[in-house]
Length: 82
Image 1: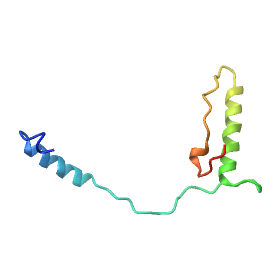
Image 2: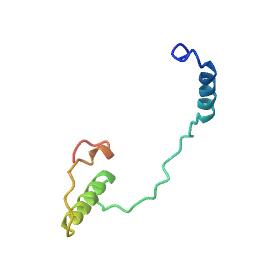
Image 3: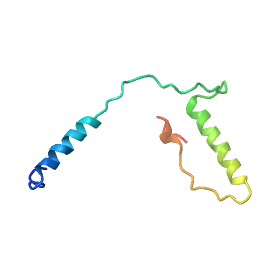
Image 4: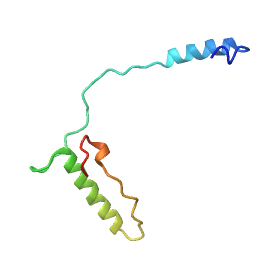
């Protein structure tokens, strides 16, 4: 980078100082999300998928709404099924 900005070496130095001051590494911790009750026969991914489908159905049924472009929720979980 110094070769590209050889006329402003001080700017390179200042950029490095700012980057070092902004460096942040968060500590690893367990999720602090609340536990939601799940139906007896569903895991978290299935419950999320069913809730999303129910919400989509309610949204599409609302007057004046247009259906969004559907996409799988599988990216929110490790499962590849939708």
